Length: 317
Image 1 (cartoon, rainbow, N blue to C red):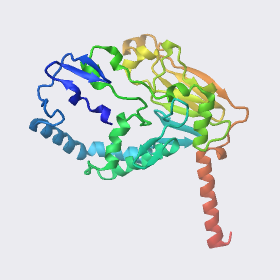
Image 2 (image 1 turned 180 degrees about the horizontal axis):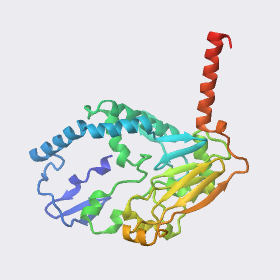
Image 3 (image 1 turned 90 degrees about the vertical axis):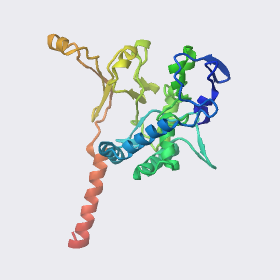
Image 4 (image 1 turned 180 degrees about the vertical axis):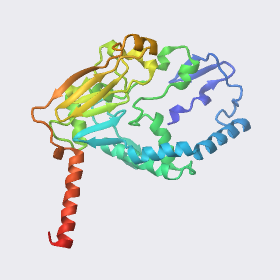
C-alpha cells in the first residue's frame, strides 16, 4: 500500500503534489501541522487525538455489539439455496483470470482470497485491544486495498478529491471484474469456483449502484448475475435514477423490485402511489423448488437424521 503515502510527495512551499509522476497544484491546502522534513510524523496534539479515538473505538459498548453481530451473522460470501451472494467483487485480471494477492510466499485468488480475508477479520475481532497485528492491518487493506474484494478499485483518491481541481485525478479505476460480470462465461467461472454447477445457480452481487440513467441494468451475464444495491444513499439517486432494488426469491423463481425515490411526506400523503415500487418477474422456473432442496431444508434433513440416529442408539428404533 505504498502508493497511499502521499504527504511525502507534497512540495509545501510550492503547494503542489506529484501523483503518478505528474505535478498538480494543491487548492485549499490545510497542512499547517505537517512537518515538511518528516510529513508522516504526527504532532503531539495529533497523536493525542489519535490515541483518544483509538481508546473510544476499543471501549465502545455499542460498537462491540455491532461487531459481535457482524461476526455472528456476517461473512465475506454466502452460499444459500445454491446461489452465491457477495459484497463488492471477485478480483479479476484483465485476462479474466482470478487475480492473486501475494502475501509473503503464498498467493490467494478467487474463493481462497475471500476465505483468507474472512479468517483474518475474525482473528482481528477476537481482541480489539490489539492494534498492531497483521490481521488488524488487513482490515485496513479490506477498506481501500487494490485487491480487496470489498473495495474493488485501483486506489482511493481522497487527497485528489479534496485538494486537486483536475477531475481526471479523482477517477477510481475499477477492477476488471466490473466489466467481466456482464459475461455469462465469467459468471459461470465464478459460480464453479464456489462449487456451484447447477443451471439454476445465480450470483447476487451487492454494494454497487446501478445507473439506470446511463442504460445500466441490474441483470448481467445473460441472467446469471443480479446487481442489488439498497439505494439508501440519497446522494446516489440522481445518478442511478432509482432508490435501489430488492430481490425476491421463492419457489417460483426470482422477482426484482425497483424502488422509486422518496421525495417528502406531504407528497406521499397527497399521492400515495407516487413512491410505488415496480415488481418484475425476471426468472420463472418450470419446476417449483421444494423445501428439501433449499439450504434450510437440508439443515432440517440433517437434524432428522441425527434424531433417528439417537432413537436407534437408545431405543433400537
